Amino acid sequence: MPAATLHETLESATEHQPGARAAISAALGSGPAHAYAFIGPPGSGKADAARAFAAELLSRGSDEPDQARRRGLADPSPHPDLAWLRPPGNQHLVDEVRERVIAQVSYRPFEGETRVFVIEDADAMAEESQNALLKTLEEPPAYVHLILVSAEPEALLETVRSRCQEVSFQALPRDVVERRLASLVEAPPETIAALAALADGDVDRARFLGGDRGGRLRERAEECCRAARAGDVSSRPWGALLKLTTEIGKEEGERVAAAAAARAEQIGKGREADRIKKAGGDAAKRADRRARTDSVDLALALSGYWFVDLIAVAEGAPGLVRNLDRSSALSEGAAGLDPALARQAAELAMETRRRLQVNVSEELALEALFHRIAASFS
Figure 1 (cartoon, rainbow, N blue to C red):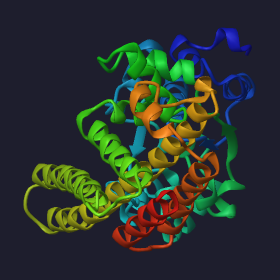
Figure 2 (cartoon, one colour):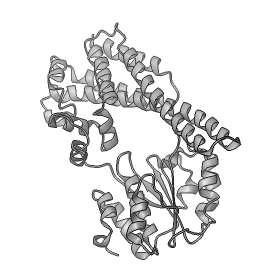
Figure 3 (cartoon, rainbow, N blue to C red):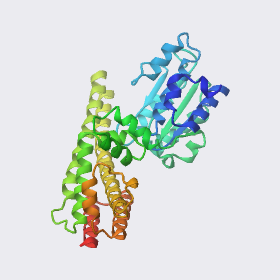
Figure 4 (cartoon, rainbow, N blue to C red):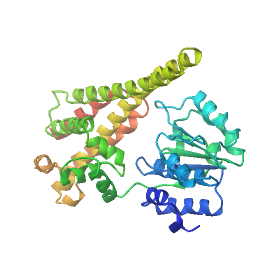
């Protein structure tokens, strides 16, 4: 089955992923495998491709393939043969993996000839969940197809990855992110270009940065950088940054808790509803923490980019600048700049990102970072 015959939704989902398109096209032509791992960086479109692929599988053998495909593409999907799991926080619940995947694969399709199980953010499965899934991945019924979607495949057990056919996705080109973002965010072209450049191929990240909280996060990070460049951080600008990341985490935790409460309310009273509420509370705490940590990580990435941009401006290479909508501030910061010090500052920001992955105190890490940068510039 050549790629040109792919259904338009699947063709659109893999438009900028020729390698993934070829792999999926070959799978549909020769007969799909039982398990796949769609792997690629955040924002590369792998989840959209997984949904389109799942919809295509569900349409096969259906009396009404177009209708089956449409229901498979819906999010959330009403198709009875599609199970789509998202982690409620920063980790999948092992009970949900057992109940919605492992326990369900033995049931034959309600419609057509296929059942599809998609685990989004599969790397968020704890080792217990992954081990529980092994037998299902190895010996699923003939009518079952499983798709694991992951941005961090190194977090998947090798025994899990080895049982899946991998389909690789690459970061989207900057111009593609820019075009998509322009349809989602109202902003001047220069700002759209800057957000796309700062997003590293991730449309969702670019959109976040173009929103209220993302825009404020960017501003707080820049305030820290400008203060450090001036050699004076006595105002402790990272305090405002951390306060904002706490707000972002709290908002995400409340969203997860509300979703769990709504699900429990649908069930009503009883042990299962109580279990869901408790699990939802635990998931909300994890979601709060993950969102807060991710926001700090993003702020550090933005800080690194800021100092790299200062180097580009100082050395007369404006084509390398990411913060295209901050030309005045960058010109001011680049005046009399020692590029070696700015390069060291960018490296320190990246080093701090790595340190935070091993549970270093965020406040102490940011304080140490910007004090060190300020000391070098003073």
